[in-house]
Image (cartoon, rainbow, N blue to C red):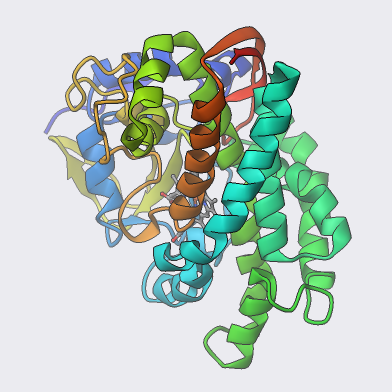
Length: 390
Ligand code: HEM
């Protein structure tokens, strides 16, 4: 047995949230598991160990929550993200029904048309903020329509979702500022996202209908509503903006994509690998466990650093290079195993539709200004002003 390497780096400083990659490289060099003493987390910074943990839910449990703060984990106990089989399997079956790959055929024409409208309008202007004007519109239109929440909810969705993400870190200033916003969201979901108020054919209504059929305890409906709204917006928005930023920095890769559209799915994977929008979640060990000779105690909270694993040179040669011919379909940006992202087909569809229409019209992206997002659960850009050449 070897001693657990330890580090007092703080993954939650504004600088580390904006650019965590130097810290990740340091953690990867320290070992397969590193005790982060500030927040008493055991971090897995390398690819192989993160992947192994994701596919072993009996040892790495999500039921005690997947966030850092114990209060937040208690508050969100029982949502799909924070549960284990068999409870998880039953909830995910209901939650994932409208998001299955075969169901995406129904929404594809709407997404295609909306993507074309957005791209045409912005490209005509020649200059726009890709992080907001380009990236927000499609996920907002698609998700608010599909979930079918009453109006006040639609207007607040983005603010609520970002606050939920900020509360996924330790109880710092960002966490405290987000708390009242999250409380408002929870109240809304319990009181207003109810049958009769939600759109009758939307995902929210479909949860209530599943409860009517006895497929789900009725009291789970508000929690599952959080599962639809929180992870579906900022994740995709950041992924879209990150992708544009990468193509602005690597015009040769944009030329490749424009010349061969079959590269779009691989470009999406490569962007998600290199600039992972959800850089970590955590698990709790159900028993004492040894990782590569390092013993960890039962009850330890283990941080799965997806953003670091995706840049591990033990797994991806020359990992810092953006190469859309790489085909990294095994990237961990959507997780893996029981909790693998249930919305990934939708996210990929949205990203693909935008890239397709941009490739029709844009020959070059030029970044004018950009500003990193500082959020406790997400990584990407808050602003990305680009000029496009056609
Ligand atoms: C590029 C965009 C996205 C990224 C990077 C992303 C990332 C992730 C990750 C890493 C997980 C795994 C959680 C874990 O390991 O515990 C996850 C789960 C999940 N995602 Fe996504 N996501 C994206 C888009 C979406 C969308 C569009 C939706 C909904 C419409 C969604 C809904 C969910 C839900 C409900 C879960 C929990 C699944 C479960 O616990 O079984 N995500 N996502």
